[in-house]
Image 1 (tube, rainbow, N blue to C red):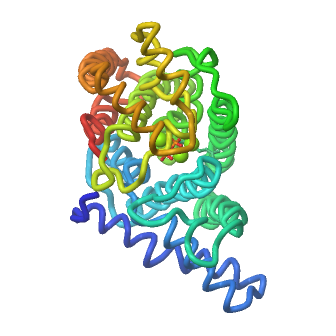
Image 2 (image 1 turned 180 degrees about the horizontal axis):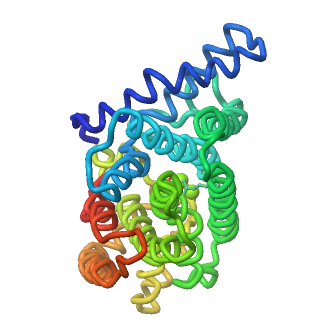
Length: 350
Ligand code: GPP
Ligand code: MG
Ligand code: MG
Ligand code: MG
C-alpha cells in the first residue's frame, strides 16, 4: 500500500486523532473505566480505525463541499468529517468481525486485530465497542441537529442491511461442503449489494444529504440508484484483487478461494468453463490449503479472467457514467458528487 499521505488525508485523520479519540475515551471515563482498559479501548480505536484509505469517510466532507459549491468553514469541516469518521468506525466494526469470520490473516499490512498479540476473541467485544462509538459521537455532536433521528435510523438500517449481506456471504460459503451449484450471479449480486454497497457507497452520500438537511425521498432514491451499482463494481474489484492483487498492493492476503466464497471471479469462471475445467474447480475450489488454491489460480489464468475483468470494468464504468450523466439535478444532487466518488475507485489497484 502506498504510504504517501495527501494534505486532505492528514486533515481528515487529525480530526480523529486530535479530537474524536479523546472524546470517546471521556465517555468511557464517565463510567470509571480503569486505566488498563481505557488504554485498551484507545488502542482498539487507533489500530482499527486509522490506516485505511478512508475513501468512505472522506467522501462525506467532499460531498458536502461539492453540494454547497464552496470550501467548508472549520465548523462544517469538523462536523462532516466527524460523520465521515462514524462511517470509518462502522467499517472498523465490520472488518474486525469479518476477519474473524473469514479466517483472514492480514489487514492493512498488519496481522488482523484478532491475531494481534493478546487479543484473540476479545476482538469480538472490541468490535461491539467500535459500533458503540458511532452512536456516542452521533449523540455528542448531532443531538440537536434536525436530522438526528434520521441519521441514527440510517446507521441502524445500513448496519442491518450489511449484516444480511454478510449472512448470505457466509451461508453461500460453507467450510465443509463445496457445491459450485450454490453459486450464481443473482446470489452474487444480492451478497455484494447488501454486504458492501449500502455502507460503502450509499451511506456516505445519504449522510451528507441529511447533514445539509436537504435529503428527500427523491434525491435519496437517485443517489441509491447510482451508488448501489457503483458499490457492486467496487466489490467486483475487491474480489478481483483478492485473487490477482499482490500483498504490496492490497495489504492483505486473499482468502476467497480457500474460503469457498461466491466471488465474482468464480462465478465468471463457472459461466465460461468447459466440463473439464469445471471438474478442476469441483476438485480444488474451497479447500483450505495453498496447493489447491494454486491449481485454481492457474486455471483462472488459463481462462484469461484478468482480461475478462478489464473488459467488464470498462463496460460497467461506461454504464455508471451514463447513469450519472442522466440524473435529474432539480432536487439537490449533482453529477459532481457521484463523479468524485467514482474517480476514487476507478481502476484502483489497492
Ligand atoms: C467485505 O467483504 C464486506 C464486509 C467487510 C462487511 C462485513 C459485514 C459484517 C456484518 C461483519 P470481504 O470479506 O470481501 O472484505 P475483505 O476482502 O476486506 O475481507
Ligand atoms: Mg473478508
Ligand atoms: Mg467477508
Ligand atoms: Mg474481499
